[in-house]
Image 1 (cartoon, rainbow, N blue to C red):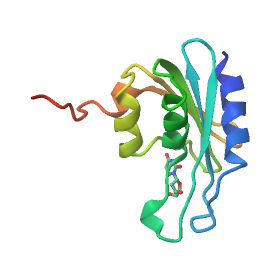
Image 2 (image 1 turned 90 degrees about the horizontal axis):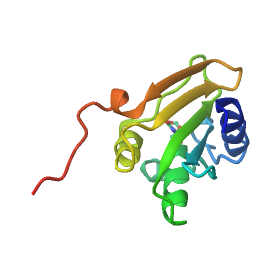
Image 3 (image 1 turned 45 degrees about the vertical axis):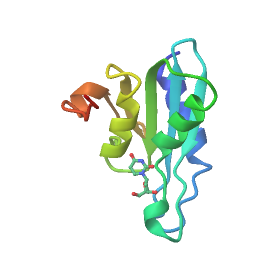
Length: 128
Ligand code: THU
């Protein structure tokens, strides 16, 4: 799937964000290696710390639907510059693919691309 189409899916997801506190809506669209798309939006709570990022909503939806192989994620926010995933989302995504392509876009069409491992070069690894 082309990046532009995945960004469109993330925009659609963003429309469903629940962000009455920050007013900062984020959408994410995670692409599996066999071409399926799982979407997520941020979901906030009046107990602010319980809020969840769009990226992890998409990831947990995909994994709990039986998916583990991902190729790209698109993230969209209405920001001046494209936003990158927070540290917690980087760590949770990296569990599945350090080479994941991260496509960060604004609603107005600015785009930046990364590989996950460049955004999180020294992830936590359980070694015991
Ligand atoms: N947020 C995301 O959904 N993804 C990110 O990558 C960064 C931040 C959300 C969390 C919160 O609901 C709002 O954006 C403001 O921080």
